[in-house]
Image (tube, rainbow, N blue to C red; front, side, top):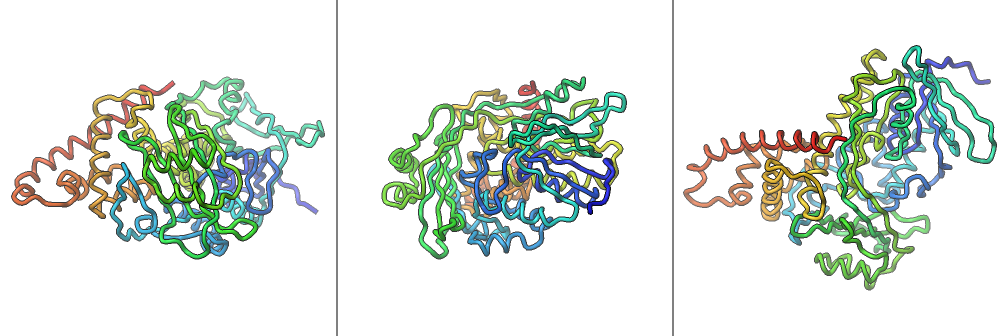
Length: 485
């Protein structure tokens, strides 16, 4: 017999996405019951679900994301490794490529995972199902949270089954967290409740992924992944990542090409081979031409990155939060979405520790700081490309020119390469790329000292570094204001 649980001791999470599953893990320590309401039927094994069409495209778990998942679910990495995921140092076992040149390699002490997103979700679901007081309710449509205008708080959620049964149910809660992704209905709900809309930043990129899976020889490959970053000279990113074996025991590669603003690869092996030859990645070209394809070539469209600035609202309902892509949906070419959601979950855990009073304001401010880093990286990287529209004030152009120089230097200076990798894995902030130790190496051609020049120029470069950092801060601030809707 189930004991009675009062509404204020129940939390409801909308969406059993990665963000939703991590949110449930954080909330289970604060509430007697946590209920996840999910539109999709949730598979028991590693398999894609309808509500996450992007999940079958190339994925990997960044070092910071893996650290957080390991903290929340001890032994998480070992389970995935046991299923065939490849763990390794991303500065050693991933070939990072810019303009056809591979970065120098050097041990970083970091650990990432080459593994599919369905495998990550499946293990998270398995772990969350075992948490005390947590239950999942799949196959339901969330109609709307219930808002009490007299108290200014959300008190329940209305939902109904998708099986054809028309009866509507209402479940009370002390906290409701929207983790339904970039298609979140929260803006409409807030408007209906009388709240101002959150300012929105948007960058139109017109991205399209073309992806195929191929059979991989058993055993550990020399590289777990090859990652080609988009640059102004070659705005055609690509990725090749080892994946765990499929249900038939076949080890796999997943290869993907992304194209901006109409420069898209047709969903055929021939088109993938042609793009691979054009960008100089022979490994993918060989797979597309002579490899064993596992399934059809597939595509995924991503028209724009968006960020909703709930931290800027003066009024917000109590008992209601948003997390994950419902806050910010990032260009998937940078591979930081899962890790950003994990960082937001940790921010929620810290915000909850100080109680309910002022929770929304406290959490949204903390989440904004988390999102700032991947957002700046994605927006800065996208606006460096000539085929992406958007404002490019002088400070942004200066920073992008510096990053281009840094990437060139990283091809022969392993210390610069590691510094860059630490940033894209969300271990270090972007400002670390402007630290004296990195800045001076970049400006001196990646550490290749020219006789008689370094001592005389050091003071000038340090002064330039200070100015550079100020320009960087001003650039992103100005960019955010211009993009705000």
